[in-house]
Amino acid sequence: MTDKTKATGAAEQDRVLIFDTTLRDGEQSPGATMTHDEKLEIAEMLDEMGVDIIEAGFPIASEGDFEAVSDIARQSKNSVICGLARANFKDIDRCWEAVRHARRPRIHTFIGTSPLHRAIPNLDMDQMAERIHETVTHARNLCDNVQWSPMDATRTEHDYLCRVVEIAIKAGATTINIPDTVGYTAPRESAELIRMLLERVPGADTITFATHCHNDLGMATANALAAVEAGARQIECTINGLGERAGNTALEEVVMALKVRNDIMPYRTGIDTTRIMGISRRVAAVSGFPVQYNKAIVGKNAFAHESGIHQDGMLKNAQTFEIMRPEDIGLSATNLVMGKHSGRAALRAKLRDLGYELADNQLNDVFVRFKALADRKKEVYDDDLVALMTDTASEGAGDHMQVKFLRVICGTEAPQSADLILTMDGTDHQVTAQGDGPVDATFNAIKKLFPHHARLALYQVHAVTEGTDAQATVSVRLEEDGKIVTGQSSDTDTVVASAKAYVSALNNLIVRRAKTKPEEDVKSAS
Ligand SMILES: CC(=O)SCCNC(=O)CCNC(=O)[C@H](O)C(C)(C)COP(=O)(O)OP(=O)(O)OC[C@H]1O[C@@H](n2cnc3c(N)ncnc32)[C@H](O)[C@@H]1OP(=O)(O)O
Ligand SMILES: CC(C)C(=O)C(=O)O
Ligand SMILES: [Mn+2]
Image (cartoon, rainbow, N blue to C red; front, side, top):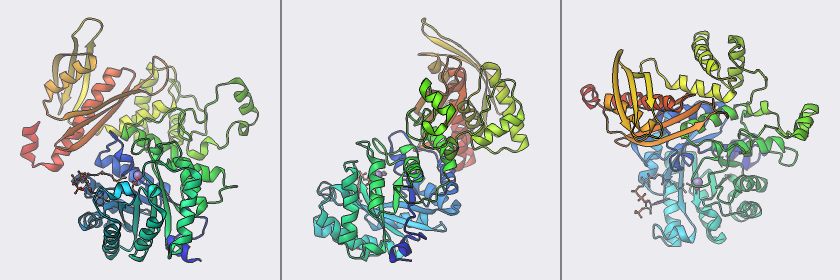
């Protein structure tokens, strides 16, 4: 074993560590905020799929971030749990307080080292070098697993970059991450930078180099892979490439590229690739960022063939037009067409393919919903079933209210109006309200029955499948006193889906209030 493999903890030189930052850099995408429970769920899925390091959040950023990182640390099984901290003792202490609950904690501290970024905290080169020495030393005194990042490394002078990387290594950093913060580099340059650091920095062979790329010029995956070929052994990435601006390197892309082109990139990851589709769908749902149809690996069209020559080739030999098998990323291997004549056995098999393992009583419940949907739709597609499962998961047995009846009058003559019956704690309440459009009228009706001050932070609709009988999935995000809750629902009627999503968010809000306020306050607030 070489010194380098000792430092990475990897058994062999060909092992590339996967560092997922969906919950930190991914969540920084404007509008991608996830709730506490959603973060825990995604972290569990990341852990189970074999992600080596999960960056769970930025603990100093808010109480919510701190709680999320602490709880993810507590629930972690195999993954290293990492939190982000700026280059100051307060951030680092707060980060340690959160990650220390993990079986394998890591502190990730960073500072911008390029000329543009050095000007922000107004530090000259020497002062910044001193700050790096102090903060990495402090982090290392708390935790034996410390990652340091020179933010905007790809626009930092090489001599200065070598100098600060050496300081961080001497102060005890075990991983040095080289971020292309603004997605500026290109593959050859990305590789040369890692090679240059490995050659010039004393001690570089004792730590792991990581690559952290952004997709501003569409090169995040290529840049990350180039860095690996030059010696980086940790790739920082996010599910679906979620992240600031144009996003980060997509986990599914680098992992599948290393698997499919192992002949020319002989590196291994520890990822169970059959879980890719499941987590991609879940991250899309909870972040409210749908995956574009032609997205590599996880896009709806990634394995779809419509043109005759392609279909002919596929029928004769799938390898003619497919470089990987759909099953490898967890896409349905069976070709069961689901509709109103399907039974429980087919539904169970189909849901298993989609990543849902159900007990008998759960299956019975889902089957009733499936039949109701199949009565309204000719064919129930995989995405319809995923929407159905998401709906089932977001409805709790202890929900305070449910939509019982909704009739909306809409059309060219304003105002539109909604007749609504909500069952609230077992009692039906009826109301009529008007609004600017059917959804506005419906939301006004709900608000009349359940007055509140939560702000509607997001209302998003997308069609689950094609066709005029397609289901609509609606996501609603509400914000109250800095706390965020979401609700989701699907229905072939967009307004019904909207009403149910709004009510689901309000049910979550009630739970949230109960967790943060004394009993009496909760009652009076509603
Ligand atoms: C490239 C990246 O992804 S970096 C991570 C970016 N992520 C985020 O910013 C999300 C979370 N951030 C937040 O919640 C807030 O910005 C907080 C809580 C961290 C800080 O909030 P505030 O104290 O109000 O500061 P604000 O955001 O206005 O400005 C950032 C401050 O941090 C300083 N700073 C920024 N980066 C660093 C760093 N790496 N090390 C030390 N200080 C830093 C800035 O100089 C500025 O301080 P100043 O106001 O004294 O000049
Ligand atoms: C905090 C750092 C690693 C970052 O996200 C970036 O530079 O893009
Ligand atoms: Mn980043």
